[in-house]
Image 1 (cartoon, rainbow, N blue to C red):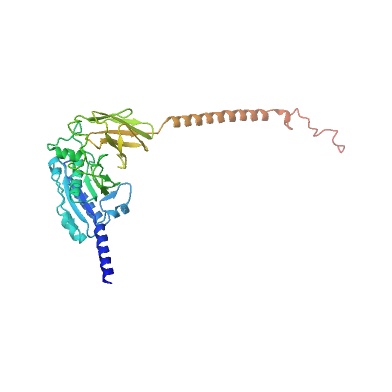
Image 2: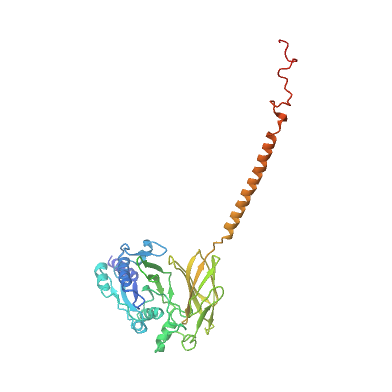
Length: 386
C-alpha cells in the first residue's frame, strides 16, 4: 500500500512539474513607445495573466476566450525584461519569479514593470535571441514569449544592418530562428489597446517557442551569413509595387490578388524571407513565413495595406503601402446605358402603339352614329304601324 501511495505521489509531482510554464515577457522601451501606452499595456497584461476581463484593450481578429491559455497557474515561472537600444537589449538577463499566489506575486512582479521609454532603436531579433540564450543555458526546451512593442521588425537605416561591436552578439542575432538553426514559434495572438495613438503598438502572445533544434552560436554550425559578408544588402520591390529598403512609396492596384514581388541586392544565395501584409484600417495581419527570394501572393479585400518584406537569416527589410480598389465604374456606366436604352426603346414602342390606337379610333366607318352609316332606324321598311 505504501509503495502504491509513493508511486501516486511521485506521479503527481511529475505531472505538476511538467505543467509548470516558463514565461518570458519582453517590453519595448524605445522612444517610439509612448509612456501612456506602456502603462495601459501593463494593465492589459496584468488582466490577461490573472484571467480578468479586458478593460482597455481587445483581441485582434478574435475574442477574450482566445486568451485563456495565457492565464497564469500556480507554479509558473515568469520574468519581465526590457529591450530597445543595443545596450539595453544586450543586458537582458531574465530573473524568473515562481508564482504561488497569483494576485500577490503578480503584483510584486509588476511593480518593476518598465514604463519609461529611452533609446532610438529597437533590437527585436536580438531580444528574442537573448531569451533563447537564457533558456538554452538553463535547459529550458520550450517556453511562452509575450512581447509588448510598437514595431515587430528591426529598422537600422538604409542598409537595414545593425552594427555590433562584439561578433558574438552579431551571430546570436543573425543565427536565431534560421532554416538551419530553427527556434520554432507557434502562431501568435495579438492584443491592441483601445485608445492608443500608435497603430503599430501591440501585445504579442506566442504560446510556444520550441528550442529542441536550436543551438547557441558557440555550439551551432557557423552561419554562411555574417554582417560583414552582406553589408549593404537592400530589398527592392518589383512591379507593380514601388519602394525599397530606404524609400516608402504608395501603389494602387485594381485587383483583389496582391502579388508581392521583390529582389535583393547583395543578398546571400540561401536568403529566406518573411512577408507581412497589415490592413491599416483594422490592423488585421496576413503573413507568409520563411520563403525564398522572389514572390508571395495574398487574396485581399479592398483597403489600404502596409506590406513588409524582411530577411530572417540576415538583416534587411523594406516596406511599402498598397491600396486595393476592385471597384470599376465602367459596370455602373454600362448598366445606366442599358437602362437608358431600355427606357428609350419602351418609350418609342409605346408611342407607336398609342398612335396606332388613335388612328383606328378616328376612322368613322365603324361608327353607328356616322352620317354615312347603314343603320335603318326610321325606315318605312321596318314598320307598318305608321
